[in-house]
Length: 112
Length: 112
Image 1 (tube, rainbow over the protein chains, first blue to last red):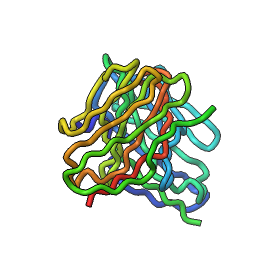
Image 2: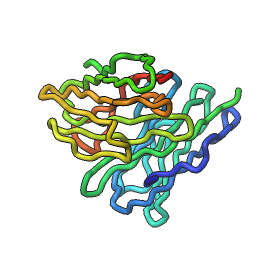
Image 3: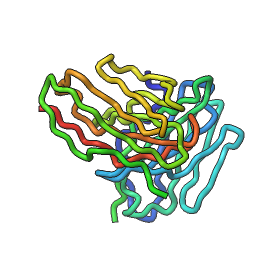
Image 4: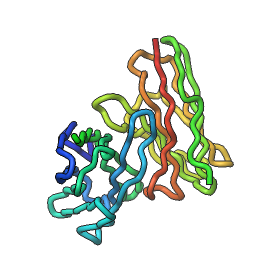
């Protein structure tokens, strides 16, 4: 069951512009949300997270926004750089099992 | 601090064979999760172990199994391999269930 959904398999943006990656979830028990970045031939690496008690968390060029009522979160990258080109996975955890579930990923391409 | 180590990195097996993959978590991490990554499917949750106990299992057939040892190292086994089992298998460790996960580089399994 797809409890975490990333409906855009790919996104292409110009260098210097904003990249916005979206993620939706269905389980209202999720209370911790994370974004991971994955380069080819490497495992995903943690990028940024947000707890359900907040609606925004910022770390340098990366900002995650959480809209609990809409069960939606987004990752903003400003300004986008070619080195940001990777697959981005959204993840969520919480509930009685506290399992972590991942979305299908969005491939971001930042063009120079 | 050493990261998550998965062995082997690459594996080629024939249909019907069985395979065992190994994962050594970060020292002190007691939670180990396994994921299957295939193109377009994102990270599919296989199972999670914590303190040698399987906490949860994803929607995979019984051919997929795993275990965790007292030193937190984990193995997953796939029996009667099928062509569709070809994928990148990722192991992630975390201090506790639901916390930020650290991934290994994965084992690329090819079934021919």
